[in-house]
Length: 156
Image (cartoon, rainbow, N blue to C red):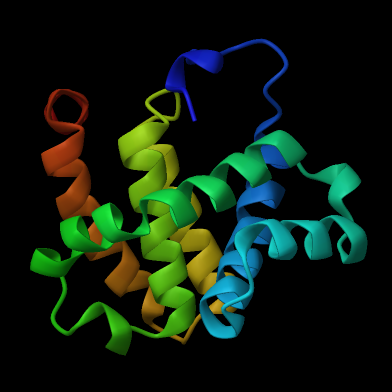
């Protein structure tokens, strides 16, 4: 979970494989949230059942383990930005928010705009019809806090 492992523009980072890893991670987090299965078991199940060779497996595992390890901290940061308790947020949107929050906090190698775009895309793909707009609004405000210099420079 060290952001220094992959500096921005690091050679060997495949954006498409990272996107697939995020999609798989959201599915794994959804399963983890609903089943209560230990995260190691969820990862093992996904390795066995999913087509993981096209995803960045290391990134997938970092995301899933990282969200699970920091879920209380991530939720605490999200709570002031939500219009309802975390437990009442749709499970897909909750997973996308936690995933995006983890990347914003612990993956400084990923530009905040990439984090937001990817979270929006997974919410569009798996969530409710307008869930992605909720995810976007919450994570945009979180990015303004956690990635303030990057956020301000991107906004001009």
